[in-house]
Image 1: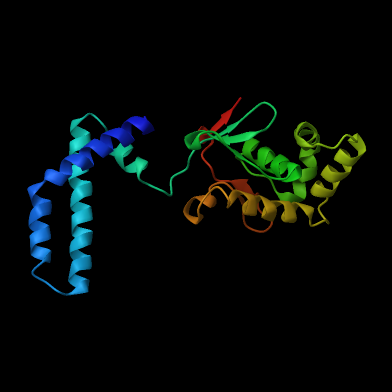
Image 2 (image 1 turned 90 degrees about the vertical axis):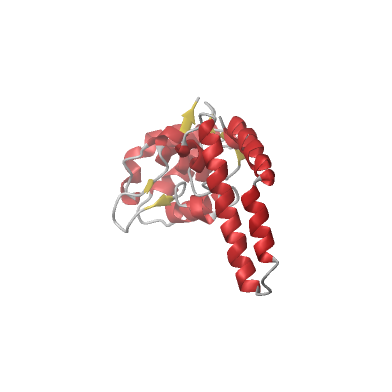
Length: 205
């Protein structure tokens, strides 16, 4: 749908170059020397283009919701997670999201629990974390894997907060500020932390 919408949008905007309204606006601009006025007219032109393009696209059978969701840079986008916990962005040519194994294990755990988890109760998810991290970690020693998970779930250790911060930094390489908040772990102190991303955007394989 995205490629189709992009192509149709191009055709619609291309057709607008013949629009007499755009020509009349350009003529009016030449009558004024004020930079502020030119900026106002430029904004008007852009809004006019959006309105006309939207009308044209809707006449092609594309809903207004699809049109405006396609230009909303703050919207969520899907992530695809393979059976061995590699994470990809399907809308960006399957670009892979890279992060540290323990950080990724924490991310995967929270994606699997949209209801949220209190950091101090992470020990309740010890077995699940061990299973996820065991698949992700490059460590050959099972003892090292267990020690890393135990440190992460220890309520008097700061490891989970460090990993959560590292997750935010890692994801900031792939999402801008308007979108990042949907993908990171957030929550008030003492309350369940969660990832706000709509789980319909998470594709598990």
